[in-house]
Amino acid sequence: MFGCGDDGNTIVRQRMVAGAALAASLCAGAMLWPAFAGATESRAQIPDLGRAGYGWFSIGDDLLPPSSGAGPVVSDPAHPYRSNTSGRQPTFRVADVSNPVLQPWVVERLKQTNARTLSGKVPFNARERCWPAGVPGFEVFTLLRPVYFLQTPTEVVIVNEGDNQVRHVHLNVPHSKIPKPSWYGESVGHYENGDTLVVDTVGFNDKTFIDNYLTPHTTRLHVVERFKLGEGGNAHPTGTTAEDIPRFKATEGGGKTLEVSITVDDPGAFTHAWTGVQVYRLEFEGDWEETICGENNATAHFAYENDVVPIPQSAKPDF
Image (cartoon, rainbow, N blue to C red):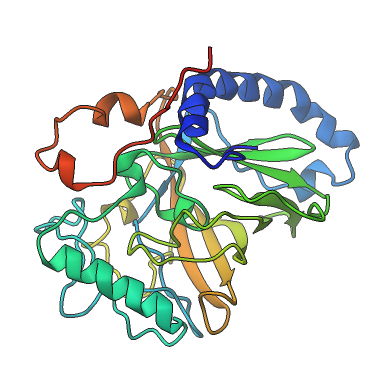
């Protein structure tokens, strides 16, 4: 499972084999797909989450609020966040700490992060610094790189092309009795209604963040994601417009969308469970690209290099 180790050395080692692993997964998926006909679930009950040459692009890099009920941390109204695809002057994130689901220590951590950002410091971003995103951070990892699903009878491999971040979802099996804490946790899943993949994840370390506002969590984090296929006609999330999110425009993916309802529960960080939403659109991408984050960000190319979290580095070679 990706991220079973907890040190930078393990992360770097995983980067080295990522390209080979993805190629092997593609070949395995192609060979195993016919076996679905004899699997417990018939082919008609399994949503087709992959299409050659196409990838799923998120419409935004923040978790969106649900139609009702408790939701995720959002931008402070006094300091609105704008991404570099919004068509407006981009800004860094400043969290609205008034969300009632936040426990006091989480509020204090977010206030510290806000203060650092407002002082002119560059906030940490997992994608920019080549660190694993965790879950549900994986859903807001990047705007510009697609997500792919490789489906076999026993597992679904979810890949974000940005830095080849990989998740493994084991199908129709229970969780381990004592999952080993890891960056992406232990994910098990199943299909529902012919259009939905349900993923249940536990067994996290506490080194990742819930979102790009850097909301912390504990090792008691439990996340359930429901990936539901749909059409793009009315997929505008609450509080956003086509002006805010260019990807609402017609695409070559036939208007297909993938809406993810994400339930987050962590008794160590939140007063109760809450729900966030992400929406992906299917777009033509062509061949997969191998994008190794560390090869681009390891130098002093950035003027603020000494003022940010360093990229993962190996203390010793593993060969």
